[in-house]
Length: 623
Image (cartoon, rainbow, N blue to C red):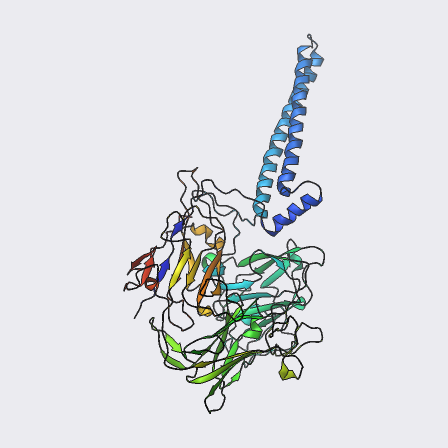
């Protein structure tokens, strides 16, 4: 049995100079826009203001010099006149006092401008010292990837977010529903939803634990009456739905979202705080809401398996959308042939009756991919994990259901039970036929047909071909490639088969670093997957996907520095563990890839070399 392994792409950044704080992000962009509109140019507004103050202080210095010259002239021309000498002394004394004031003002101004530059870069002033030139990284962000948060939308520092967006957060384990819904009563059984005491009023946001507000207006965060909340049955994903549009129809608006820590903040299902240890400060992120309202319906981009083919029964059913979809409309369970119906998997053997296999629909890939896996165990993969199969020797038909339309298309109708079809993150109904018009489902008796339907067959025993990595960016075998890289480069790995998207997560893929322990709550990462054709191009409608590209988005790397000989070079180590599986549910064997010896019995691939022991992780620098 293969032990848990990892592929480590070990690289460091060796930029020649430290990175200085810059005005970046939504706040900085807003300040820059103010400066431009005021006719001050396109430079950062803190720099403009600082320059104006420095010029003013310089003029005061010139005035001071004039005063001292005048006092000296008065003293030298006094000719024994005691009164004139005293006046000269008074001018000099006052000039010295003025000099002290000017120098103090200069120091205070420099301090304030440096702090403002750090704030507009999203900085919390963490880092620096012997660890390169890093500084100003925002804290309360490490829970994404390294902590309890798997992903969320809008993403960190997202721009162009529509005004009718919803805020969605997915955790790695179940969360107390009352953390997000004010007054929610789970009747003392948080894992059992059937006995929950819910009323029409228990849908409002718990604004004591979750705060969403325009930057600088925390005291005006969305209240329980201004936002409703829905959640997926596994209690891991929560969808916050503002009652009114966010932002402004004329100006882009910067927002902050906070998930608070502590006993009154976000809690795990056992009641303990969700944020603990290095991440005990909670989680905060920013995004920018545009002036646009999204009225574009979602469409199916590609599916696995392809229509018309015949496949091994352990294939996972996968639906990929062209945009994020609301997880409450796309995730659920089928038990005893009933339950979740927004996506239906029907099995019809030759000459037999149609049945609906039991199983689970899971959403992943930043809410763009939905997968169905049955509960019918049919074997064990090379990592010792159970493999599940669709009914074999049968025809499988999959229907992605369009919802009932509301009175204001393209919005779908939202009942007290939720949506009865797939909608996007703003509630637009599925456009299953791809004509750009929402028509609803024929099940509702409408003329149009926006259901997306395809069929394939299953036959034979399970096939357990393991996935393999074809290439990485940067190339871990090329020292030049993995040094001097851009601070915002996103590491990538291309696999030789389509991956089971739900296994591409921060538990199986991540980035290790030697950054100081004090910076742990500043470093975050999140993952995305894109299916590719054999030619390496993105798979679209009608294309046969045969590869997958995994991308790790992250906080920008710390820059190395050659100006300080005592500085510690920052190291970043992308890691892919054997928990990654392909759509045949077999696990990735890191040393069985093209990068390492495919015949090696060693479970780990470390910088292109197979090893029996786990790859050595970089040791964090001292705080």
